[in-house]
Length: 280
Length: 276
Image (cartoon, rainbow over all chains, first blue to last red; front, side, top):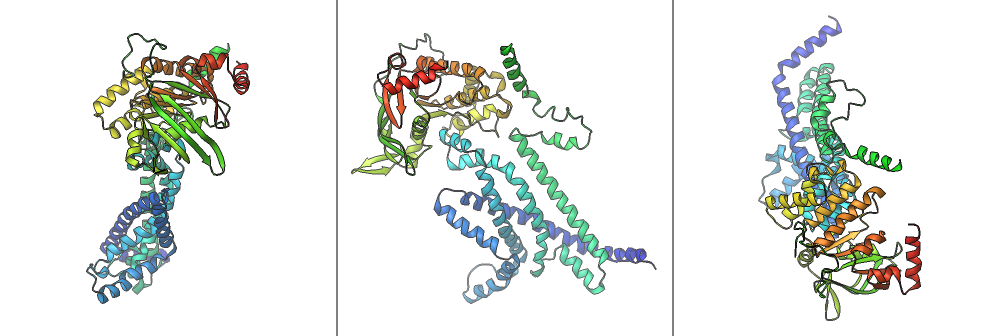
């Protein structure tokens, strides 16, 4: 039997356990989506605090960001699942034991850790919103919440998406670290578990490679769509429909941007024409 | 007070009266940036309905004055009163005590500002830019705000641009929207900070004409910083000449522009008007 036939058999064996693999995949997707959501929440809160002029908000935010960026995610998990229960039992603290909620612990740890990184992206992109925009909101007497929600954040949003996309893809792959948690069996854990007794590497590693790649591709696609929409709303790019239709149909060089601002595009030429007219 | 949307039956710029009550009052105002003192011991008042133009060389503190009134800069010394109420600090037992955020906001909603760089919100359409603050800050019904916005857009000649994005507009059009946005708040005080300095020369006139109409048809108090001396002369009740953070002289435009008392004013005006 040559190598190819062996591999075919290996894949056959692996497919017998497809249920476990799919369970693992679902867990990985759940960790990525829920962990990403928690991370986003943490990032927005810490990022807004870190960008505040008030030291009472900025100080604690900096401490939290640097702490959770600095510590190892793996060690954080050890602490949450194995160290924390010691204290909970010893001091009889009335909170649910983390060992009974290992999935939630995984989501929280991923969210806090990646959220600390993302907070920097949030803070940095808030500072790139021009000063004039902040001043206009003051001139219109907007409250802090109002200006952030309606004016500043939507503008910073377009800029922070690429960094957040990066971190989200990191989180997807980093989610494999939950293997140390009891009863949280993600895709990597299952693949490795199925491999261990057989010591077959190729088929298992290939399934892992392709699955993670495809998942990352989906995340990238989602984030690109969000970025295109955000830019369109700022009047800086074509609409979503055009972004994705551009990939399907060939576009002539000068037709590409044709309808992006089509309805309002008369302005520049008109101004130019008027200037030209006066010169003559 | 007639709103900008009602055309005055007989617009006659020079017959309207200023009430005599000070609506803006600077008392011993000092502004420093670090060690750099920009304004010192500045005292002046602006009466209700009065239109005051600040002229002077760049760096003389004119724009800083507008920014102080808009609370965009921190007041480092002295007091500013709006309608007799302290804007940033009040005097209490000889000490400066900051006023509450709430009090400040209440006064600030009566002040509007148009910026040199327009500062329209790019994430909103023209109409949304105009109704955002009236609806969400003043709590006006949306229908009413939209109707008023359309009126104002008509006034500034941009009725067809309500749904356009600011980025698709020319500079002159953006500034006209910014004027409409400021007027939509029905400000008692309007601050105009070099509103034509960033514009192409051929659109300066249309923006100034809109402001002339606003001046003629309303009695909104205006504090103006501009390099357009013709405009200053047409709309101002009073011109204040600044240099080095001090008022060199002030008076009606006819007096300042034709027969100034001070040498510094003369040399400044001949430099500015000379190249026209």
